[in-house]
Image (cartoon, rainbow, N blue to C red; front, top):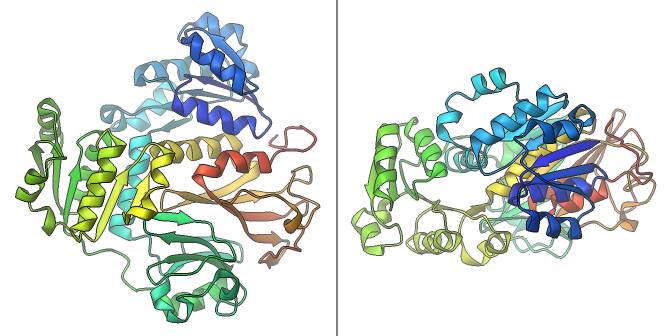
Length: 455
């Protein structure tokens, strides 16, 4: 499959890296020659030092030969124009990154008029995950994922006291025929291994036969789906703060947003209803005290600086705030969260890359996918015999720490795999993968014969 990417920023580079792992032919266009030289030395991609807005550049690449085009420059209008040009020059599907809230209010119109197949917005994507955590608590009484005979739910370890202090290899005695595929602990999602010990505050994601999962659900899942939060403070009035405060205020929650830019505060006040907009430095502890941070049910730190977001989140947690979420753009900081006690840290880049990969891979391979607290993904995949993970027992395959084969559909049979299980051609499997390991997962699904199994 041929994919062209305009813009060699963080998003474009990470998508390119993931696609190379899946044996795609990738072309990257950017105006920065130094960036392209570095990229070409690290990845097997074709690079082009040019302006993708120029029709002649796209014509020379023969857009009709490309399956996908991703416009991911740092300018919304440029991305819309480039994607439209690529589509009109014959590219099968085009994707554009669009972040401006003004565009988001008319997204359907933009897609239709400019003939763009898919639009991604990192800030809106992370807002959706924060909203689900704060408002819905990710708790569904009938399972959060189901396909055929399989279903998945989340349960609190505290609801099954017999699991507290148990290692993962002993859990099957208490959950027969089911598999724990992920653990949420202190703000971080983990893919479990045999020697992991369960803690009282852990949240487990369990997959099994739908009938068994429903029976477990009736025993351990709280009946109330929505949380009872009423007061939320958002530190940082950027795009994420704007999107989130708007959604929360629509539920009649009391929302305060603190932003250090006076000009931005005026914009927020003009575009938000029933939201208190405060001009001030969110790192000013005296200001936070004056604004009664101790009385908040939830605090979200969404400034443009990872360090500020983490430190403010830690401060809020130390004050006893029940739900504290930090926006973190660098993976190195995300890994620190479990030691800090913050409830959740989300990386908008990882979430957006996941969205783009699912679009490119399409329904022929990826049947469905669902994020787990914005940090991991459970993916339903159709297996082709040429994939690297077929024909060998799972114990003989090398999996990244963040990847787990959760279940296998084979005809009418549902298999919870063991180390001796062999994946076969025609199987439909459920894989749990940390977003940070998506690139490694693509390599795992690579076609051994270097044929395009997506077509």
